[in-house]
Length: 90
Image (cartoon, rainbow, N blue to C red; front, side, top):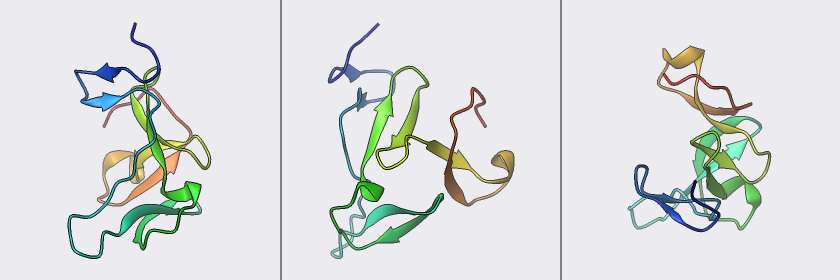
């Protein structure tokens, strides 16, 4: 098993290394949390914009609340949120 800071080659992400999800547009806005919902906002330096790859659950989690990326309505929606990590893949 790989450890913190190492590259998980299957997913292309570094284990537990902080990163931002940022637009390629000139505005460079970032994926942010508002409650448990995701929105694109201006960079602000808050933990609500910081994400990391969790090797144990193989999910992307928020540094602000340790919840994982989740597709609303059990995967039948186009909206994203963060939610307590489960073992289901949609």
